[in-house]
Image (tube, rainbow, N blue to C red; front, side, top):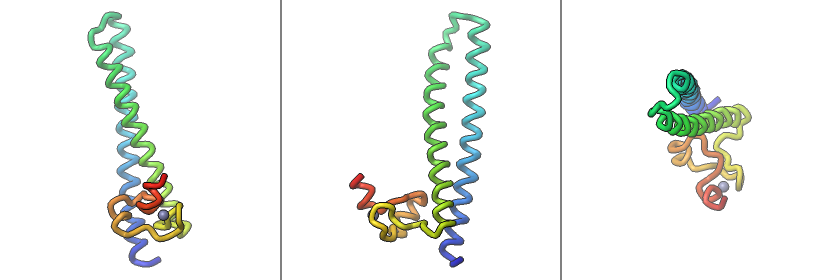
Length: 117
Ligand SMILES: [Zn+2]
């Protein structure tokens, strides 16, 4: 393996660990929120916090979904690296410019193909 892809793998593995920690933490937070809303409903049906918790839950669910997608993107990038397909545009099969990969290591297309989608 050349120096470049070793560095890339290291970066992606770091991103993967971060992404997993983040989804795990968000998952815990969401569970805690569900627990909190359940117990507060049991205590008081007219809990003034009710709508706030529902809103928080909806927001957290969206954030968690985005975190899961990001995590899946990082996993996919590592798979492409294993297959030797990393950094190759899925649209036009040309190499994705290094600057784009540096800014967005999980990119699967060059900017041209991304904007044509
Ligand atoms: Zn392309």
